[in-house]
Image (tube, rainbow, N blue to C red; front, side, top):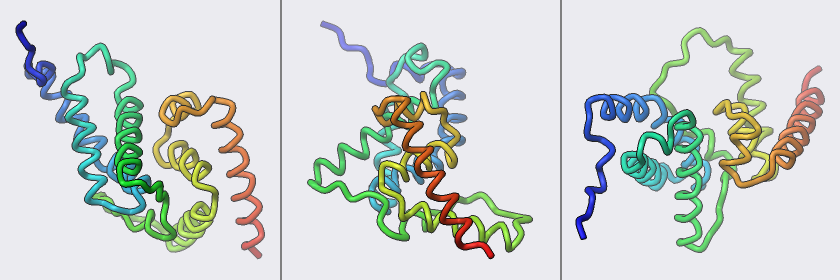
Length: 180
């Protein structure tokens, strides 16, 4: 019985271009997401993201066509949770560590007030329950729809909506209480 090569997908210049563009665009957000899921461990997160892209290379184009980003985040999430299960601990979003992950992109032109507001909101998000933190970050930091978040997290769309609504209401109340 003949075996097909595991890297059969990346055989054309078009496929290679797709993979290179996809990696360039999504490697940093996936690494930040995996780092948060893995309790701030950037090294393990990079391994998870690398494994995610290796799995993408093995997919036929029709398997990811039209929903590549959602596919990447779903596979990345499952792989990160597999790593945590293997280690016997489900440590998520360690206090203060999630926001230490940096990006190579500069932040020019940000006003001090915007930075303070942003920092205050991130600090408040850290105090949300882990399931609310995850859906809020997927929605507002990664731009996923409720339906996409539902597929990534295996929660119902209604549950995603409830978690986001509850989290936003709590953040709004806490933020208003901090302002004069």
